[in-house]
Length: 379
Length: 213
Image (cartoon, each protein chain N blue to C red):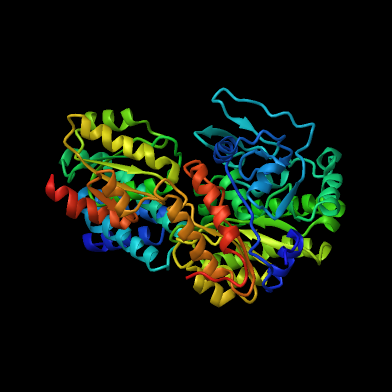
């Protein structure tokens, strides 16, 4: 029996075994272009697919990789015209600026970097969430995906995904914001509240029009690094968690049928219980070689409450240190750990990086398609 | 206050990340004619070592580590100018994040820890081209070159730096580290040392690399 993608996804998140493990992809523009050209795909690139950098991909590419998901993005405002600065950086409507360093668009200007007073944060002008151009064509696309395809539909919100990363990585600067959290918590909290309010408004604008067509809403806030948490669990619980809860409760209030997919890189095991507590249904990317993120252990501890999305290691198996064989081995390792009983969506543990070869990328998806058939049987 | 009291209090202020107190105490130490090298070796270094332990034990996280680093840098900014005259450095290391990678946090923590342990550290910043590593090593007459990378995609430029060093007439040891770097990878590109984190970096530099210079 072959299920349709959406049904496959729903069974998986209900912790039942569908016909096979659902597949998703996150990918950098550079890796995408290489695999697209390798496959000789010339089809029009009609699907927005960027995370952390703009990217459009074709339906044919998604089909070739057996992807069970399609995405709906909120538009940036059409009235915003980005400026290019003398150092080559370009601004965004939120006010931070970035610049390409090789394959990565890195942030080079943080608009809140010099703030010392809460009033400066309060007075900062965010872009207008209610600008009608944000939703132009969006509901139509979402309805098309929901009614005319059998894919599971992922809603990509237009504002901040959370409250910490937007401040630390984008608006204030990482070091400065972490120091604020200790030395000037009032300022840090004002920044997070400012972000929270924008997130809630943006989410409402988006979900009021498209919620009925979505299966997933994708959010996140990066809390981990390779070997541990960025901040202590105590600091997370007192300053960040209550704010994330507000954003995610508001999403769920409007969309009780929707599953919440939360992204955080790194070694975040000590906070997984907290994430479940604030409404997270699907955890991405379960970075497999981060400390304490052993896949079998995570499945054993949280597998009954959480669906895992990701898992395929990009730091070794899919990197230039690995090859096609190591990718196949990696796929089997994750399937064995995460797939039994459902609750697993196989995907790379972040955007596929430019050092993954087209052969590695295709091996990942073709092997996952072959070995991900239930009941999982891998020697 | 006795010398050992002042140094103990500086140590405590650095561990607790209390910049203001650390600054006042350091000025007092100078007034009391405590040798700057003692302030570094008896207060800063053990403090940062303790911070490293607290971090590795999961009691400190990045914010606490940063606060301590700031307090440490405050102390160093006061005593470092006095130190040069004493010629007390154990050795010189050029450190940078390699081309194509603008990540500074890990590299900065390593630089701070090495400074605290008495090395002269020449930080050439991020996105540093191969030539910059070579030039800085020549200019500073370095004993060691440290290369950091956060992205797997920067690993090829890390290798290029090692290759260029080996081809040059520089007689330096190379230590590498950062998110995607492993001991095996370090060996495969011909580095002399690999460090897991900032505490490990101090250990490798002092015990393995400098002793063989």
